Image (cartoon, rainbow, N blue to C red; front, top):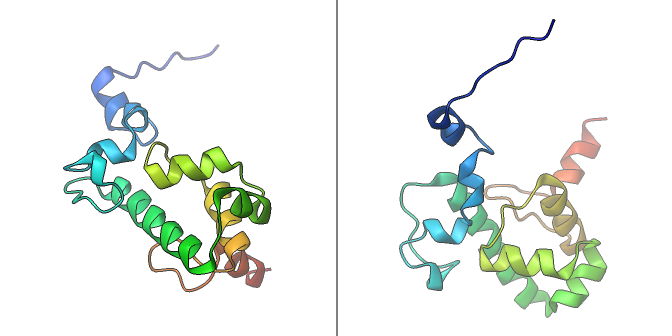
Length: 123
C-alpha cells in the first residue's frame, strides 16, 4: 500500500523548485528594470542567474552575436536565450551547457571551461 505524503505550504515554499521558481529571478532585484546590473541582496540563486545573464550578455557582445546567431550555434531557442538575458526564467543545466558549448567559453560563475568539457574529461 502506498503512503500518502503531505507537504505543507511552508515546506513547499522553502523547497528548491517550489514556489520560489514561480518568481522570475529579476524580480528579486532591488530594481528589476536594471537587470542584470541591479543589486540583488538576499537571494544567491537569483544571483547565479544574474551572473549567467551578465556573462552571456558580455560574451555575445564580444563575439558580435545576435540572439538568432547564438541560437544556431547552441541549439537553444532564441526566446529561451532572451528570457535568460532579461531574467524572466530560471535556466536549466542543458540550456547553460549548450550555451557554453556554442560560445566556446564558460558562463557559470567561477568556471574555467564549459561544463561539458569538464564532464568529458571525467570519462
